[in-house]
Image 1: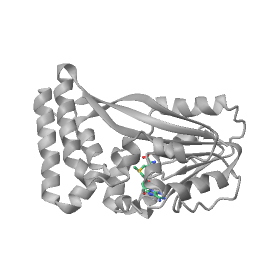
Image 2: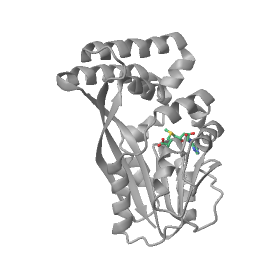
Image 3: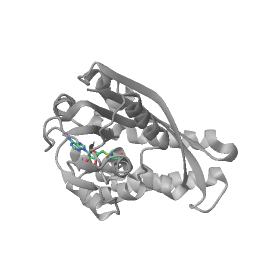
Image 4: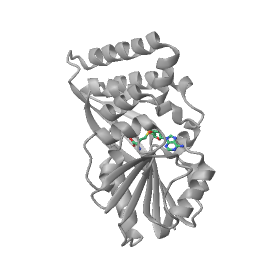
Length: 269
Ligand SMILES: C[S@@+](CC[C@H](N)C(=O)[O-])C[C@H]1O[C@@H](n2cnc3c(N)ncnc32)[C@H](O)[C@@H]1O
């Protein structure tokens, strides 16, 4: 299991601080799907691999009860510590053994998490837990990311691409699910009624400091940090310096835009 990648307390803290919630366009895709399928029961949503809970909060607006689950105690501790809506609770448990009754869940989600699971065992749980007419939404952000700032977007994107290239050797083999745009995950979903959307685009304004924090939240960066702490810290320092120089600014609070592409696999039982 690759879950140990998110087990460290300091990684969970970086995660809570720098990860952003699923983008509005992705939320829109999921809500439109529920509408299209004429879902009328909004009792229980389960957000599997919820990390520090940013994704679970969003479901709380629509569902009476939301349970965020994660195999990492450190992530769930951070999730519980952070402010969260009163109808959201958290549980430590693996995605492959979810402690809910058969046919009890209206919506099951996993945001940037399903590729870490044991897919055949997780899919059995999805089938077991969903009510008839229940839905599942499994999404991830892809490796396609661009940076935008005034006239230097190409140069900034190239710097970011180089950083991702340096971190790529520290990727877990599960990255293959992301690089194939969740096609294998889509194929494994045991429902006839399903679809895969691969062009969900998002633009996120963030400061250079936040961008550096976001890079440090990558599991590849955490693996690199463990293997070569000095080299990992220098990568962040050098990248920040290169980005500031390219932008022609000195403050790490200067805002730029991170453009991302997300994919989502949707299914209806
Ligand atoms: C990239 S994070 C995503 C967190 C959150 N959904 C978000 O969008 O910010 C992936 C999460 O999946 C969890 N995870 C990995 N393998 C798991 C498993 N087998 N069962 C449950 N959670 C798992 C990790 O602990 C981690 O918190």
